[in-house]
Amino acid sequence: DSYYSAANAATIIDQSGIGPFSMTELQKKLSGKLVNAGPYINELSEGVRGSSDSTSLETMLQLVYLYFTAPRRDSAAFLSYISRQESIFENMMVNPYYYFADVKNQIKYRNHPRRQITDLASLQKIGLDEVLRTYRDRFADAGDFTFVFVGNFDPAKLEPLLATYLGNLPAIGRQESWKDVGAGLVEGHIDTTIVRGQAPKALVEMNYHGAFEYKGIQRYHFYSMLSALRIRLREAMREDTGGVYGVNVNGVALPFPTPHYRVTLSFNSEPDRTRELIATAKEVIATLQNQGIDEGTLQKVKETQLQSRIKGLKENGFWLGQISTRLQYGIGLDGIRMEKYEPYVEALSAEDIQKAAQRYLQEDNFIQVVLMPEQN
Image 1 (cartoon, rainbow, N blue to C red):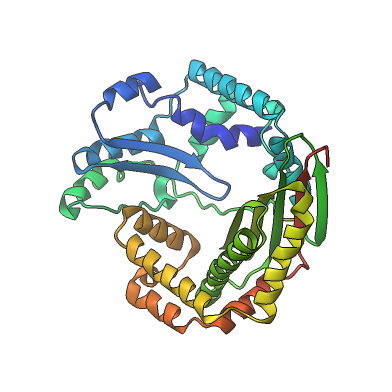
Image 2 (spheres, rainbow, N blue to C red):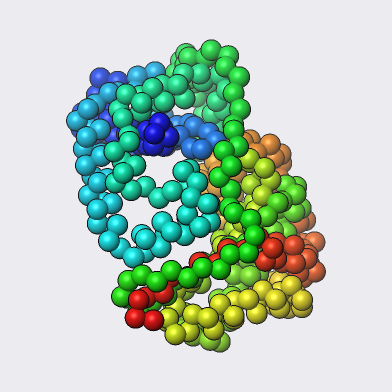
């Protein structure tokens, strides 16, 4: 039961105000300032995110300091949060798409408690005492935190502020590591159809997953393959076939808890054409594996990558995400720079993408879940 309190702890603390200020009082205090900050607790890490303009930088750091040192117990805010969540889930539980998401996760993760969809029963397991205990424990030691700042600021002016607000955070020298709780996707080949609801629309989700060699070139080829697959699927299923309401291709390669990847294809379609469209998707994948891609698709992939990197290098969010992720995953920061990234793009070949499709889109570990309406 403590898991549900831990999973909601940062959100509840964030909505309770901070230090002596309730949420309403804090909002009044910050009125007119472009500043925000808030804590998070994820499965493998915790931290504080924030942003501000140059004039409110000290205020942001004050908020960060208080989220570490003065989390606020607010019973009224806690009860309000639980009440709002109950209303949300009471409405969602009659929705066939919520049912689909719930059953789908049970299938994909063997009903693992860490992958269950939140419901009314789990909300009742959240306790304010446990929320505060977990939160205080997670933020009791700033000694193993890494703080990343990006933006337009004067380092000479920032440094004394960091010394004041971050330098005085509690540090107890605790040694910690993450734990593999065994909440990965189920292995093997699974094909399941769920019948629920009356809406004349089918939902399809196809998952490929497996072990991953977490190296720079492997990551690059993996994500390049996803880009090519996305282009080809949208061309084939939207323009050539019709009857589909949208095709999404998402994928990720991660080093923790063990290096692994997953690729997810999802789309909505007319129920009578669902199997046909699944076959079309698999034909696109087979073609990618057996024949590769044409020069036009390869150039689209490369152009998109370069334009995305050029755009990203001008944005704070890109730099923050890249630096934070690379530090967490032990990846060198020099790969962010264009002169390091561009050679990857120039060297990318159709064969690289074909080999990646052969490696990462096998059906040895494949989970397909389909939602069909009851009248079908």
